[in-house]
Amino acid sequence: MIQLENLTKSFGERTIFSDISFRIQDGEKIGIVGKNGAGKSTLLKIMIGIEDFDSGKLSGLRKEDIGYAEQMPNFTQSTLLDEMLRDGAEEFQARKILYGLGFTESELAKNPKNFSGGETGKITLARALLNEPRILILDEPTNHLDIYAIDFLEDFIKNYRGTVIAVTHDRHFLQNCVEKILDMENGKATIYPGNYEKYFQLKSERREYEWKAYEKQQEEIAKLEDFVRRNKVRASTAKRARSRQNILDRMERLEKPPSNESVKVKLGDAAESANKVLILDNVNFKGIIKNFSLEIIKGEKIGLIGKNGVGKSTLLKIIVGELKSDSGEIKIGNRVKIGYLSQGHEDLNVNATPLEELVNEFNLTLEKARSELARLDLGAQIVEKPIGDLSGGEKTRVALAKLILHGANFLILDEPTNHLDLPAREAIESALNSFDGTILIVTHDRYLLDSVTTRVIEFEKREVTPIKQDKAAKSKPASEKSASAVKPKPAPKVDVQFEKLEATLKMYEMELKMLEYEINNAVDPAKLAELAAEHELKLKEIDELYSALLA
Image (cartoon, rainbow, N blue to C red; front, side, top):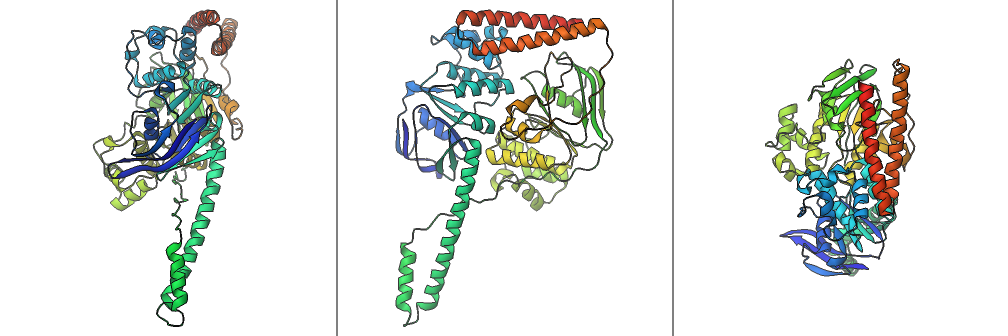
């Protein structure tokens, strides 16, 4: 059992949290949530022993029992597979985890130092999972993972026999993988039983009760103070006034609860546009995007999912004109005004403050700019810092403020909830749901997909016609979404040979998915190696078929 008693931590004069106490039983799976800056990552660092605390007691955590995906890993081996095996791990389990997190057979021979930052995060996560420690501690484990790798991670965590402690803003992960949630707020920590939806319900009920109790006490205090003020100077009533004052002096005052008001984001009414908002016809780009066709109708809210690296963000940049396609046709409908939120926020001036960014681009007064930024929980200290010094979540909020002011009727969003805490994610979800315009959104936030989208497209590099409706419907915990009523474009006329090749391709791709499923569930090392070889061969066969189809 892990136990924290009256733990307090400060940085200088700023108290991060004070007198927090809770217990975690062996084998429990705990999610830790809270606004950015609430002290979640600091608490994890204390638990793994790389950060000291000021006072209190921490027990039940031995360094040798903990698995943690470190932020700055030190790779010592020349290949990814050797890096995974360096502490004597089984090759079978190492391959299974690497495949599940999206690494290919060829990448296993690559030097781990030569991967991107996001891929490096996946490697450190893989190492933490591989060791199967008694206590697994994860900090934003679904960051950098595509939707398929997240599914693998969720299955892994749900079947994990040890204790899991995860700081995360991923509501789908919190809904499916944890049995308790630790909420950090205003320097305190509160444990709620259940998953995300249960936590949301219980916290709302608790907050309502706290406000009622606080307001009732404030009314009582006001009455007592008024009686004392009116009667303390009268001889006939002075004794009763002193009695009321004694009651006031002995009263244990309730702290004012945090505000019930959540972050409010309103996108405004969308102006009228043509019925066909966007038409993409056989778009190609440098071998990354092949023969991509798509038609978006006014009012649709479309999610675009796919593995990392298949070209989702590239496609969005082509649509907004930041990149030029090699071939194919792109048509934007009449009166369509695009609002684009890029994943990297390249449109933000890193040398300007958020205030300057809004004042200069939209000709706002300082007061109006402050008001717009405050709506997204950007306070006085933040809005006067250079944008380059802001956190990822703060930059996303500034970009969202600009998007709101832009007044677009077609929103193209690339990972809009990246780096945002739970209240901000809920606000974005609410705003997108109430928006009456058109949306195309690339996201790995499955809770957002489930809540907002009317149609989901799976983008696959090897897909001839990469449009699939309601692909994500199977993972919708909250409510089922109906498919869009858009009429599909008539299929082009093809010869018999082409139809045979296409049918074979679909069969091969089905076989590939079955192999991936078997790899994920394999328990025998020899069988895993056999399946990996079959997987690689099937990929080659699919590539050869594509070459024949495109010839």
